[in-house]
Image 1 (cartoon, one colour):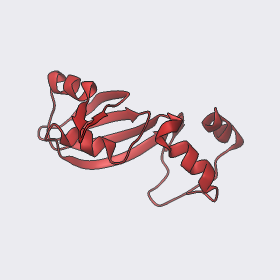
Image 2: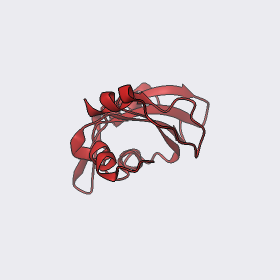
Image 3: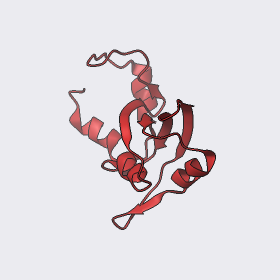
Image 4: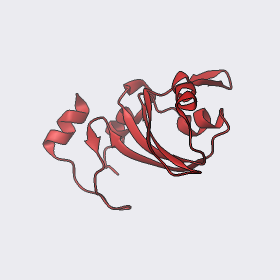
Length: 123
């Protein structure tokens, strides 16, 4: 949440190439071969969808949590990428933008960014 929409749009725009980190729960437990296929990306509707990195955080039988880092963040990019492999996304949570971590901020809560955090995002 911000009162500076121009700044926020610039930060979130795909062309900014600011890393956005997500924790994604999926409805399967991928092996290393499948993770490598995710990392290679997929062409969806003529558009190559890739991620900067995809790592397995934990797996629990029928579901798993991945950490996916995007440097573009196109519309529904993660859902479309995983959907190309018939992988259902159960939960998707953005946990960081650039080096700024969400941390333990409760759902629906907000706080002011420090001057250091603003400078870090501007870099």
